[in-house]
Image 1 (cartoon, helix red, strand yellow):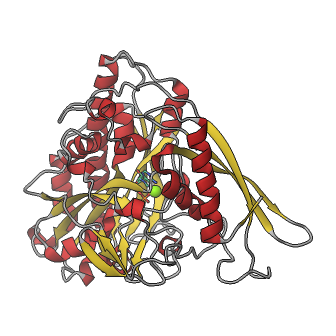
Image 2 (image 1 turned 90 degrees about the vertical axis):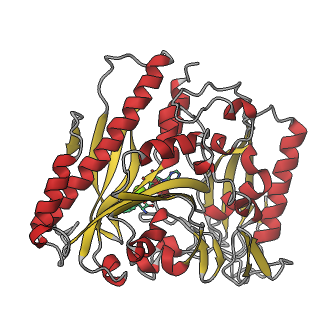
Length: 471
Ligand code: FA5
Ligand code: MG
């Protein structure tokens, strides 16, 4: 069945605001430990027990996602997508790691990658902390340093579940999947220690393609600098190898997507070719850095971030003679495009009408089952302020805290949550927020009683956990 354009466009809306690396903070930089009251002293994650502390903010509904392993369930669209991308990076050059635990140290997730202490990605509003030293990884880059240190191959891929406190809409879920890739060359192993020549020789061996990729970025400049340890020729060669490798992924993935769309009567052979572009980016652990975007259904969609690995990583991993590139691609983004899946919650569905549509190794278009009616409900409340008589430590509230309460209470029955009004009382200085929640099940029509009960529980939870005054 053909999807309505609006649905497709919604599913392809790019989450510019969800990047760990560039984020606009709306309310508070801190976040809360909303699970401390009456909580047991330890928290169990992936079969292990961790001591709780004032940093613990990982809720039960997130912990329950830890063992789903969608990327390893052969007939699941995330695993089919994973296998398709992985086939572009094969052994013996690339070794794949697909079973790394999502429980990582703050050191692995942030410090090893050179995140500054003040980076917003580290805050409790953005990251699920198990305790002050341990997090659920927010990206697969958390494993770069360890894999460089292990030195088992010239390159690697890591496919895994990653966790972020984030917005609720059709393209955001607090758990999603990334694939990391990296390729390093060793000064002591390449002929004549000439990295640039060795990388160029490897570039020649990569398949050529005739996809036109817009690229107005310069290889490096002051704002996206060459690293002092690299020569211009080395950086240029590594950038060229990186870009050609990733363009190869796009050619393969979208070639397959087009075939499936033609088979389903959703596209024609002579449709305009795909528009793809490189733009400049910033990551604490690569320089220079880029993102790859594709133009799809009227919007530029960010698929991945990448760059030349900061030399501090191999240096700290005990392999200072190595240099190269790394990337991280979002598998849900790719899968939504490949299969025409309109809502990111569907990936977590256990409904046979969803799961039975996919087969290992096959790209097919998703046929939506009936669309059930939405139900919009607003909740408005006054925030607690430190100056109010009841004030104290719960003075601030982050939009992601709202998302968390709704996820916790309504789970996948919430399709969308938006801040629709923000108001500061001119006399008291108190702040009021109003959020609109769209309750809609992917599997059935919700009754009025069910939605009212959910909404009432959301209201109560907001009051109990954050001390807000409901309006
Ligand atoms: C990163 O996570 C970097 N670790 C990527 C990287 C790796 C850069 C290696 C350099 C070297 P970013 O936060 O932009 O970057 O996420 C990477 C990709 O994950 C995005 O391009 C997007 O495809 C996907 N992604 C990010 N946030 C979400 C989200 N909330 N929902 C679905 N996909 C997302
Ligand atoms: Mg990004």
